[in-house]
Image (tube, helix red, strand yellow):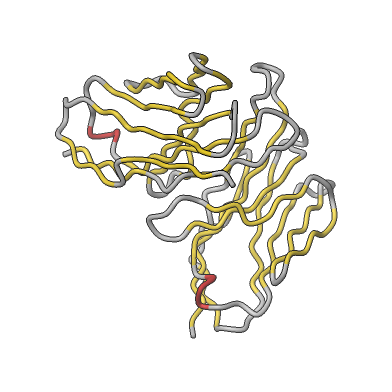
Length: 116
Length: 113
Protein backbone atom coordinates (compact mmCIF):
# COMPACT_ATOMS: atom_id res chain seq x y z
CA UNK A 1 0.00 0.00 0.00
CA UNK A 2 1.37 3.40 -0.97
CA UNK A 3 1.83 5.90 1.82
CA UNK A 4 -0.16 8.60 0.00
CA UNK A 5 -2.84 8.02 -2.61
CA UNK A 6 -4.16 10.76 -4.86
CA UNK A 7 -6.45 10.35 -7.86
CA UNK A 8 -4.51 11.68 -10.87
CA UNK A 9 -7.66 12.76 -12.72
CA UNK A 10 -7.87 14.58 -15.02
CA UNK A 11 -10.73 16.48 -13.45
CA UNK A 12 -12.66 18.88 -15.66
CA UNK A 13 -15.22 21.30 -14.23
CA UNK A 14 -17.11 24.35 -15.52
CA UNK A 15 -16.13 27.79 -14.30
CA UNK A 16 -17.81 28.66 -11.01
CA UNK A 17 -18.07 25.05 -9.82
CA UNK A 18 -16.92 23.83 -6.41
CA UNK A 19 -13.91 21.56 -6.76
CA UNK A 20 -13.02 18.83 -4.31
CA UNK A 21 -9.52 17.33 -4.35
CA UNK A 22 -8.60 14.49 -2.03
CA UNK A 23 -5.76 12.40 -0.68
CA UNK A 24 -5.71 9.38 1.58
CA UNK A 25 -2.74 8.18 3.57
CA UNK A 26 -1.85 5.03 5.43
CA UNK A 27 0.69 6.17 8.01
CA UNK A 28 -0.79 7.65 11.18
CA UNK A 29 2.58 9.26 11.93
CA UNK A 30 1.78 11.95 9.36
CA UNK A 31 0.81 15.02 11.33
CA UNK A 32 1.43 17.98 9.02
CA UNK A 33 -0.38 18.52 5.74
CA UNK A 34 0.13 20.78 2.77
CA UNK A 35 -1.36 21.47 -0.63
CA UNK A 36 0.69 22.68 -3.57
CA UNK A 37 -0.43 24.04 -6.92
CA UNK A 38 1.75 23.39 -9.94
CA UNK A 39 1.20 25.07 -13.27
CA UNK A 40 2.53 23.35 -16.37
CA UNK A 41 6.35 23.44 -16.57
CA UNK A 42 6.63 25.41 -13.31
CA UNK A 43 7.72 24.56 -9.79
CA UNK A 44 5.07 23.69 -7.16
CA UNK A 45 3.69 26.65 -5.21
CA UNK A 46 2.61 26.22 -1.61
CA UNK A 47 -1.11 26.88 -1.43
CA UNK A 48 -2.12 25.92 2.09
CA UNK A 49 -0.82 24.07 5.10
CA UNK A 50 -2.45 22.80 8.24
CA UNK A 51 -1.16 21.03 11.29
CA UNK A 52 -4.42 19.88 12.88
CA UNK A 53 -7.68 18.12 12.11
CA UNK A 54 -10.53 20.32 10.97
CA UNK A 55 -10.91 23.05 8.38
CA UNK A 56 -8.67 25.93 7.40
CA UNK A 57 -9.95 28.58 5.03
CA UNK A 58 -8.05 31.04 2.84
CA UNK A 59 -10.14 32.99 0.38
CA UNK A 60 -11.72 30.56 -2.07
CA UNK A 61 -9.68 27.65 -0.73
CA UNK A 62 -10.51 25.38 2.22
CA UNK A 63 -8.22 22.63 3.46
CA UNK A 64 -9.81 19.86 5.49
CA UNK A 65 -8.04 17.19 7.51
CA UNK A 66 -9.60 14.12 9.09
CA UNK A 67 -6.83 12.30 10.92
CA UNK A 68 -9.15 9.58 12.19
CA UNK A 69 -9.99 8.60 8.60
CA UNK A 70 -6.52 9.47 7.26
CA UNK A 71 -8.15 11.67 4.64
CA UNK A 72 -7.42 15.22 3.53
CA UNK A 73 -9.26 17.45 1.10
CA UNK A 74 -8.87 20.76 -0.68
CA UNK A 75 -12.01 22.60 -1.74
CA UNK A 76 -11.99 25.39 -4.29
CA UNK A 77 -15.07 27.59 -4.41
CA UNK A 78 -16.10 29.62 -7.45
CA UNK A 79 -13.42 27.94 -9.54
CA UNK A 80 -11.71 30.03 -12.22
CA UNK A 81 -9.84 29.09 -15.41
CA UNK A 82 -6.69 30.34 -13.65
CA UNK A 83 -7.14 27.48 -11.15
CA UNK A 84 -6.33 25.01 -13.94
CA UNK A 85 -3.21 23.26 -12.69
CA UNK A 86 -2.00 20.09 -11.01
CA UNK A 87 -2.66 19.97 -7.28
CA UNK A 88 -0.28 18.01 -5.06
CA UNK A 89 -0.94 16.99 -1.49
CA UNK A 90 2.05 16.60 0.80
CA UNK A 91 2.47 15.47 4.36
CA UNK A 92 5.20 15.13 6.91
CA UNK A 93 6.24 13.41 10.07
CA UNK A 94 9.27 14.39 12.09
CA UNK A 95 12.26 12.20 11.45
CA UNK A 96 14.75 12.02 14.28
CA UNK A 97 17.62 11.25 11.91
CA UNK A 98 19.05 14.55 10.80
CA UNK A 99 18.45 17.51 13.05
CA UNK A 100 15.99 19.95 11.54
CA UNK A 101 15.33 17.70 8.61
CA UNK A 102 11.65 17.41 7.81
CA UNK A 103 10.80 15.11 4.93
CA UNK A 104 7.68 15.53 2.84
CA UNK A 105 5.78 12.69 1.21
CA UNK A 106 3.84 13.78 -1.86
CA UNK A 107 0.84 12.48 -3.70
CA UNK A 108 1.24 12.16 -7.46
CA UNK A 109 -1.06 15.10 -8.10
CA UNK A 110 -4.52 15.68 -9.58
CA UNK A 111 -4.73 17.58 -12.85
CA UNK A 112 -7.59 20.07 -12.81
CA UNK A 113 -9.07 21.92 -15.77
CA UNK A 114 -11.62 24.68 -15.24
CA UNK A 115 -13.54 25.30 -18.45
CA UNK A 116 -14.75 28.88 -19.15
CA UNK B 1 11.16 37.98 1.23
CA UNK B 2 12.79 34.73 0.26
CA UNK B 3 13.58 33.85 -3.35
CA UNK B 4 14.92 30.64 -4.83
CA UNK B 5 16.70 30.50 -8.16
CA UNK B 6 17.59 27.57 -10.38
CA UNK B 7 19.59 27.43 -13.56
CA UNK B 8 19.65 26.56 -16.26
CA UNK B 9 15.91 26.47 -16.94
CA UNK B 10 16.26 23.95 -19.75
CA UNK B 11 19.07 21.59 -20.66
CA UNK B 12 19.59 19.00 -23.39
CA UNK B 13 22.59 16.76 -22.84
CA UNK B 14 23.90 13.60 -24.56
CA UNK B 15 24.21 10.32 -22.71
CA UNK B 16 27.54 10.08 -20.91
CA UNK B 17 28.04 13.82 -20.55
CA UNK B 18 28.49 15.54 -17.17
CA UNK B 19 25.82 17.57 -15.40
CA UNK B 20 25.79 20.52 -13.06
CA UNK B 21 22.58 22.17 -11.87
CA UNK B 22 22.68 25.06 -9.47
CA UNK B 23 20.24 26.36 -6.89
CA UNK B 24 20.57 29.47 -4.73
CA UNK B 25 18.29 30.88 -2.06
CA UNK B 26 18.05 34.54 -1.06
CA UNK B 27 16.52 36.18 1.97
CA UNK B 28 17.08 33.45 4.54
CA UNK B 29 19.97 31.94 6.45
CA UNK B 30 20.85 28.34 7.24
CA UNK B 31 17.97 26.78 5.33
CA UNK B 32 17.40 23.10 4.74
CA UNK B 33 17.86 22.45 1.02
CA UNK B 34 16.40 19.69 -1.13
CA UNK B 35 16.75 18.28 -4.63
CA UNK B 36 13.74 16.51 -6.17
CA UNK B 37 13.14 14.90 -9.53
CA UNK B 38 9.70 14.87 -11.07
CA UNK B 39 9.11 12.38 -13.87
CA UNK B 40 5.84 12.01 -15.73
CA UNK B 41 3.44 9.77 -13.83
CA UNK B 42 5.87 9.19 -10.99
CA UNK B 43 5.40 12.17 -8.73
CA UNK B 44 8.09 14.00 -6.80
CA UNK B 45 11.08 11.92 -5.80
CA UNK B 46 13.42 13.28 -3.13
CA UNK B 47 17.02 12.84 -4.26
CA UNK B 48 19.12 14.70 -1.69
CA UNK B 49 18.70 16.98 1.28
CA UNK B 50 21.11 19.13 3.25
CA UNK B 51 20.84 20.65 6.72
CA UNK B 52 24.09 22.63 6.47
CA UNK B 53 27.26 23.35 4.50
CA UNK B 54 28.92 20.12 3.45
CA UNK B 55 26.14 17.98 4.97
CA UNK B 56 24.40 15.93 2.30
CA UNK B 57 22.01 13.01 2.72
CA UNK B 58 21.04 10.80 -0.18
CA UNK B 59 17.59 9.27 -0.40
CA UNK B 60 17.99 7.26 -3.59
CA UNK B 61 21.12 5.46 -4.86
CA UNK B 62 21.95 6.68 -8.34
CA UNK B 63 24.67 8.22 -10.46
CA UNK B 64 23.86 11.70 -9.18
CA UNK B 65 25.59 13.60 -6.38
CA UNK B 66 24.96 16.83 -4.54
CA UNK B 67 27.11 19.41 -2.83
CA UNK B 68 26.52 22.45 -0.67
CA UNK B 69 29.60 24.66 -0.88
CA UNK B 70 27.90 27.70 0.66
CA UNK B 71 25.01 28.20 3.07
CA UNK B 72 22.50 29.11 0.38
CA UNK B 73 23.90 27.23 -2.60
CA UNK B 74 23.03 23.67 -3.58
CA UNK B 75 24.48 21.88 -6.60
CA UNK B 76 23.35 18.68 -8.30
CA UNK B 77 25.96 16.88 -10.39
CA UNK B 78 26.63 13.81 -12.44
CA UNK B 79 29.81 12.55 -14.06
CA UNK B 80 27.99 10.57 -16.76
CA UNK B 81 24.33 11.07 -17.57
CA UNK B 82 21.97 8.18 -18.33
CA UNK B 83 18.79 8.32 -20.41
CA UNK B 84 16.87 7.62 -17.21
CA UNK B 85 18.16 10.89 -15.71
CA UNK B 86 15.77 12.89 -17.90
CA UNK B 87 13.16 14.75 -15.90
CA UNK B 88 12.19 17.96 -14.17
CA UNK B 89 14.61 18.79 -11.36
CA UNK B 90 13.35 20.92 -8.53
CA UNK B 91 15.24 22.57 -5.71
CA UNK B 92 13.41 23.47 -2.52
CA UNK B 93 14.19 25.07 0.83
CA UNK B 94 12.66 25.06 4.28
CA UNK B 95 13.48 26.64 7.60
CA UNK B 96 15.55 24.58 10.01
CA UNK B 97 12.94 24.08 12.68
CA UNK B 98 9.42 24.87 13.73
CA UNK B 99 7.55 24.50 10.45
CA UNK B 100 7.30 21.83 7.79
CA UNK B 101 6.56 23.70 4.60
CA UNK B 102 8.97 23.55 1.69
CA UNK B 103 9.26 26.20 -1.00
CA UNK B 104 10.20 25.24 -4.52
CA UNK B 105 12.24 26.86 -7.23
CA UNK B 106 11.19 27.17 -10.88
CA UNK B 107 12.88 23.92 -11.89
CA UNK B 108 15.27 22.70 -14.58
CA UNK B 109 13.96 20.53 -17.37
CA UNK B 110 16.67 18.04 -18.35
CA UNK B 111 16.49 15.93 -21.48
CA UNK B 112 19.18 13.31 -21.97
CA UNK B 113 19.47 12.22 -25.61
